[in-house]
Image (tube, rainbow, N blue to C red; front, side, top):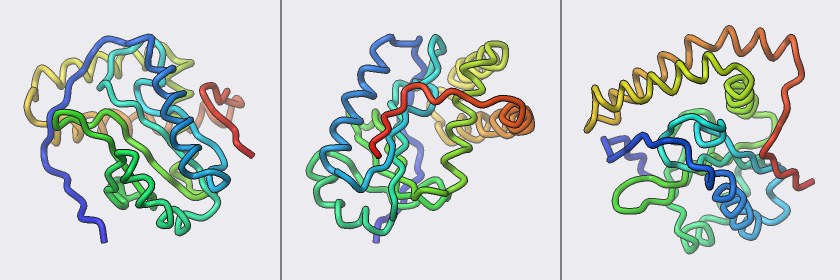
Length: 190
């Protein structure tokens, strides 16, 4: 059993780094080499997937698999590659892994089974912010403000950020219904 640790940890908000997409591509290749045919698709999600905005310098990766239970077979290979298992950390029915450097998370790997509603939620939020620069800018401004307000308190930062994300939920759902979103930065494997 994996112990889930949600204590405060160091974090930072930095200006957009044009190398983030390439970092995602490299991470996706590593994950594909470990998970093989079990991975259906690998997506770049999170703030580093939204061009131009400041973000925590984490590369968030969403891996869609056929059967989440089979991922347990890859735990040792994942750990050998530096991925630390955190279990169902976010509570959306996933296996979650991180890579840490100097106490900070630099990679977040969300592994979900095909059909999990968390997949669409992550992709729709990312795609919405890519298309709606006013809300993207408001999200960026909020993160910078929260970092200044809570420089050493990631838990309060995250709680306030999550409130903003929930406030956009209706806009994201309405947008999704009115248009078909593009799935840029996706590596389709099957």
